Image (cartoon, one colour):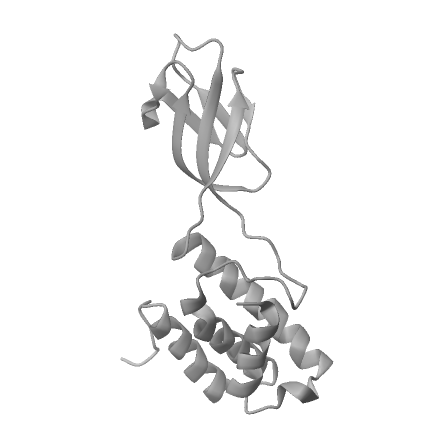
Length: 169
């Protein structure tokens, strides 16, 4: 789905006509959709990327690196978690036999911020309603409508299968 399709769903969820797009509302929607999309992309709908890294005693990770999946070396093979260490944005090989070659790193990238309406959102279409719900939640929260925004946040969490915590005892 495209960003525009998610925006339209959010307008309908707020009982607004997408043809009468308000600039402030659309700005809140876009920021919220990107925030929810990032959450979904790094927790529920993970996409894996590959990077080829030339041996060094310390290797800088790709700029879009978010979390580790797997690593292999061109001659050593698959690396156990004790064969290397990742600190910040640096990969440190810890196997003394490895002095040359390349590492293939599989990792989850940081999702990119979507601003163009025709751009595909990059997460599974089944999360479209969740994205629109979160956008609606953010809009009503910005309007200080706490009751409706709380209801929409609970709905968003339920769609994602996350535990909803309340202040009730």
